[in-house]
Structure formats: C-alpha cells, structure tokens
Length: 396
Image 1 (cartoon, one colour):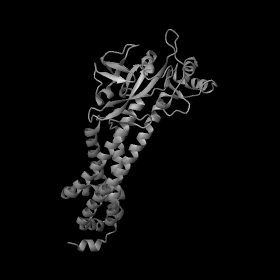
Image 2 (image 1 turned 180 degrees about the vertical axis):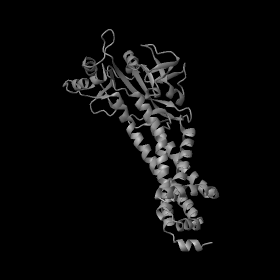
Image 3 (image 1 turned 90 degrees about the vertical axis):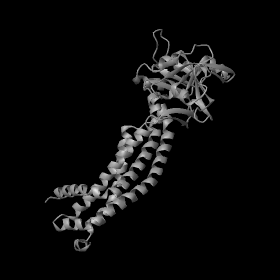
Image 4 (image 1 turned 90 degrees about the horizontal axis):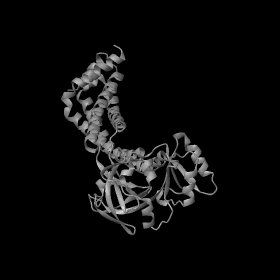
C-alpha cells in the first residue's frame, strides 16, 4: 500500500470515529472559532477605515499642500500658491477654459456624538464650485445643495449618523457665525461623508483666515499628467509646496491607524490563540490516547508511522478549518457594516466608517485557524507515530 493510500485510509477512519469524540472536538472548534471571530472583528475596523480612504482617492486628482505640512490642518497656502496651481501645466479645464482647481479651507469643530453625547472633533471643509465639479461622486440625498455666499452647510451621511445637531434645518455655531444645515450628501462611502461642507468664501472670513487656504485640489487633464504638474510646481522658486495624488495622500492618512489596529489585533489574538492551541492539543492527545490500541493495530497491519502522524495532523487541521469557517461567518454576521467613528491620527478629527469584513480577511482567518490546528496537532501526531505497538496492544 502506498503512503498516499495509507494516509487517505487513515483520514477516512479518523473521520468515521469522530462521532465518538464530539465533546472534545467541539471544544477545540469553539475555541478556534472564538479566536477567529475576534481577529476578523478587530481587523474589520482597519479594513473599514482603509476603505473610506481608498474610495476617496482618485489618481487623476492632485492635492497641493504647503511644503513640510503633514496634513490639511497644518497647511497654509497663500494666494500666490493657489494661482501657481491654477497656471500649472497638466491641469484640466472646464468648457470656459477655467482651471479646475479648488482652494479649500479645513478646520475642526466640536459636535456631540449621538451615542454618548460627548464632544468630538468633526471636519468642516470650505469648498468651491470647482470642488463640487471635481468630485462627481457627491450626491445630495436629502434637502438641497448649499447656496454660495450664504451661511449654509451640507452634511455627509456618516457625520449625520454619528453626530447630533446635523439634521436638516438645524443651526450650528462655528467661528463667528451661525450656519444652517440645508442638505445631506453621500460620496460613495468615502471620507468626505465624515465632513461638513460650507462655502469657502464665507467660511474663511468667519475664521479670520483672509485669502489663505489649507489645500488646493486640482483635477488633472489625465492620470499621466501628474508628473508634469508636480515637477512644474516643486521646481518653481516662488512657491514652496508638496504635491501628491489623492490616492497617495489618503493611503498615507490611513496608514497609522491601520498599523495600530493590526498590531493590537495580532497581539490580542496571539494570546487568545495560545488557549485555542492548548484546547487543540488536549483534543488530539485525548484522541490519540483513546485510540492507542486502534493505532497500534493499524501499524501492525502495515500502516507506517508517518502515515499515522499525517492522519492525526489532518484531523486537527480539519477541526481548525471548521472552527475558522464558523468564526469567520460569525464575524461577518456580527461586524460587517457596523457603523462607528474613530480618530484620524493625522488630522485628529473623527472619521465615520463601517466595519468591513472582506473576503481577504476571511481567507486570512482560515490560514490563522489552520496554523492553530497545525501546532495543536503536531505533537500528538508525533506521539501517535512513536508509540510502541506491543505496549499499545496490551493496553485495555
């Protein structure tokens, strides 16, 4: 009998006898499922946050900030900088020949959370008509678009769900003025939905910022125009700016939180996995001990010790895979789409997002479960392969 046929026969035999060991096997499956549920649930936070950032990024849109600024909060651009962006080669233009650039103003305002009534920093963005044109994904879902030149704001769907005082008709006090909420908007689930928008020409004076802007957003003539656009601005001695694609900028914005959440997830779940491994070890040692005479009989009939070892590991992997699948499905049912808000560590503002249990996460969960099963089955498998046939046959 070839080694492959031996392994297949032993695995089939193990599965037929699994019914008699359902108690210990279920314990291992439940332990692994719990670890996987927690792992996928925590990582879905990072995936959800990454998703709102990635959706926001478009490779044919460029962001221009002051050189040395980490984000919009620390960037201040004057009128000379703004004009240089509009005159740069590679910028798209509307039907009237006007450059599609939007100098925008970014501040943080305090709003209470609906769930806890505690204050949080919410982004308030001053936009322009060109800024709306550059973002075709913006759709008003309730109310209307703000009127230019008036103290009006529109609220992103995520911000509206998370923060009080953002219902249509509400009045908010920011800077030196009062602002009326006139509409709610969606933006394909991007980070823009975590913001409040007002007319930049009205918002700037309310914060005594004069003609300065935080950032300039430029629509490029094509994705391939970025290098020409960037080189023209960064080589201009009259200005000092940095240029990034929208995709690059928002990817960097999400990196800190993703690294933090991923690191914590694996630390916590590695500690929990130790318990699951001990559960798997106990299950497989119990299985080997209970079936020592059966294993010895099989070896006496010609089954090799290597085939026995592989069959025990295969059983452990199967139990782990079942636990991983149960845990991944449970995490999907509980966490996917759950809405929350967290801190964007680049701007110290709140970002509303939904947990995202992706297929990639579920595959990683299965791999993690299999690793637990491999470790949990390895040592019992060695014991099964090395046990003395004569001693095992004499056991009752």
